[in-house]
Length: 111
Length: 114
Image (cartoon, rainbow over all chains, first blue to last red; front, side, top):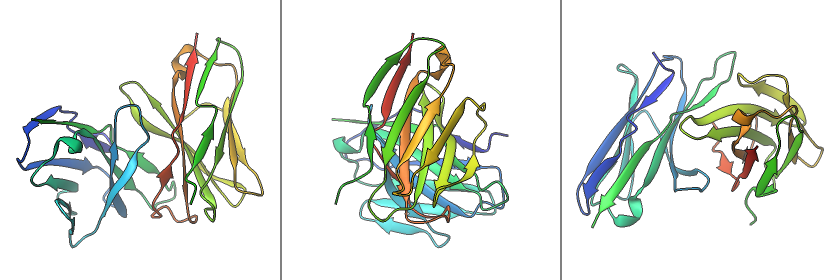
């Protein structure tokens, strides 16, 4: 099993719809989780951290399911500007202190 | 406040050459991370420096090396370039050595090896 896995997509979603995608991780000792957004040929930018209790930032909701070892990102009332690649990041606070990025899920919002 | 800066923005080299990429972190950040983003492979963790020390490195050969200077800026050196080294090299910085710190990325250096 890969350390961090994401559905590459693309997810083609009409404007205004709700879309959700998951990211699974293999190391049960992983401690911190993030969602980043990357626009075409640009650097990744932090979207939100993911907390155990789940957290919301406007139209975006992130959740962590430790039992099933996945994190999720929900986008409500999607906008054209949400079109991007969404990367999940898993930090493992073990001896290796590895920082692992998923390959990303491509999202296309359709007008 | 200035973000993470990287130079050069683009670079073309030939196989066997050596290259040095540079990164300046956000003011106050002591940790610098280097990543390689090759087409179709996602971001691969290369190196992590904090307070001038190498804290960890990813699964890359020794010809990938770097250092961090007293002002926390960093260099990534790649020797004996190979075609598959063509990629976007991203630098990120964060406040401290705890890996839970949020990382902020620079715009990257796009390296093409011919």
